[in-house]
Image (tube, rainbow, N blue to C red; front, top):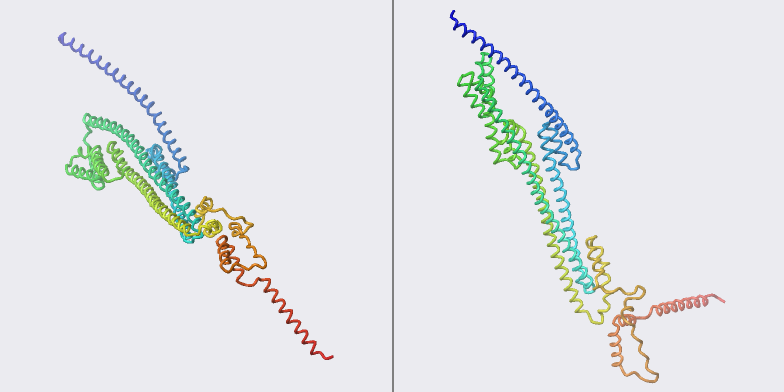
Length: 505
């Protein structure tokens, strides 16, 4: 053997030995690095998994606490979240759902209070209108016109004040509803932005994972499947053909017609999920136009998210968000209906106030007419004639009418009552002096002077002269009783005399 060939063989053996040792060292180092990376990843994932589990447990505990909330909608929403057994749903309830439910309950309570105030004020205005109309009826009596007019004016003022309270309550309810809608919109947009950012981040991670898996399949193709694997793959493909979504069924049909075991395996590994994602995206895009506000937001977030988000939205989220849309719609309709009823009541209160003011104006007109037609000398006796108004009208209403009556009693237009111990006629009208009798032996000046004196006395005290005239029309009571006694005594004496004459001596 030539020396040159022996040298080449020796150099080749040395190179092979060196390469073998280098490869063994590289594999040992790679194994060590892999073990270190595995330990580091485990050290990262295990605490994060424990922390995630602890976080889920805390979320459930907080949701359980909220089932005892003072707000009815918060209790119901917390129970729904717990019944779903989904950590994502429970976390979404704690982040957004509980505040939405509490805001709806608070708004409903505030609207109920304000509309109740409007209803009470409307009833008050109606009662004061009835009071004013009853005082207008009493004002037709000239003797009660002044007091009735004052009471009607007070009732009209009370009716106008009640109408103002009703209008203010309705305005406050409308402002509350507008503020609640604005706050709800802001809260919704904030949660929508948060969920969209979270979905986009998850989608980026998923895209990177799918790209890595696709590259791995290209670099490391799977071996040709066995007959058993081909049969099992075709059976699974037939199942997708029967139960899958539209694009899944069409893709399965094309794969089965191709009759390529490798294409069937690729369809089962990746194609079926891509076809399902396409169907879910098409359905989500349709809900962007047809669903409610919460449903549209959920569809938009699912479109920006991962395949799992799309699948979850298609299976469960759509129905949960549809229920939320129904609850919010029913709440808004109920609030607007209550405000509409309160608005109608406020309008009726304004009409009642206008009617009460018209009745008060009419009563004032009647009082002025009665005052103008009353004789000047009798205007001082209005206290006695106006006093029965409160007693006559006090039984016509409840607390609403009493407001007008009490206002009339404190009005400066009412005259002061007479002294309780003195009759009204004597307290208001001075007693005329008795005319002196003509001196003895001197004849009267005639009937003309007597008539003139009688007229002067009647003009000075009409009530006293009327009473005296009524007394002069008949005999006094004591004279009639004395005559009857004398007649009875005479009859008794006659009977006694006749009996004695019949007795024999």
